[in-house]
Length: 112
Image (cartoon, rainbow, N blue to C red; front, side, top):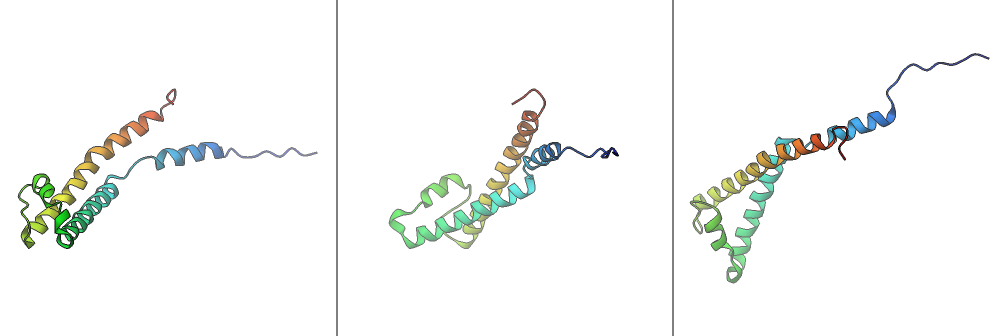
């Protein structure tokens, strides 16, 4: 009988853990764009809601959260869009690297 030898190939379990390890990292650009657009859309929907239902308006909140924002002109609306988009990037730039740091640190041998 002939003995069959297999060449050394990566263990599928190692390949799976390698893919899992790389998939746990958050790409900062994608996170920043996603959060920025999400917050800008949310701001736009809130302004539309405030215009449609003035008795339930949130614009007093926007006045406190968005420096330079006044109710309501095109300049102020565009400023609010830019500021909410920037807030999304702020969260991404702070949260993304922190998450990536702790995700990699948690994958080191001996850690659960």
